[in-house]
Length: 111
Image (cartoon, rainbow, N blue to C red; front, side):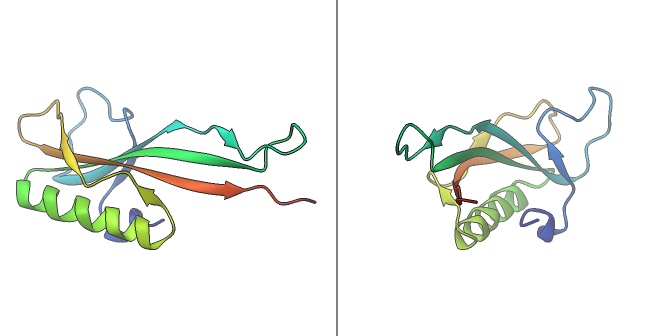
């Protein structure tokens, strides 16, 4: 929801087809890890959700600006960024990519 609020298309990373036209600017994301944590009596009390967030654009300044704004918005929403956006490889010469990593913490509640 946070990334969608920027008004750009949002895709699960790797779901754009090889021949599919890229939008001028768009986000992709990937959940790379979700280990459980905070064990007590051999039961997890939570999980740590790790995401790679990518932003691609035909305009480098847009890629740099929007990726940093998205990082800050996710931080403000309670995610923990792991540094600032860095260059991300693009398989299209027309697009520049930026990416960053964030983690979200889920606390399991007793029922």
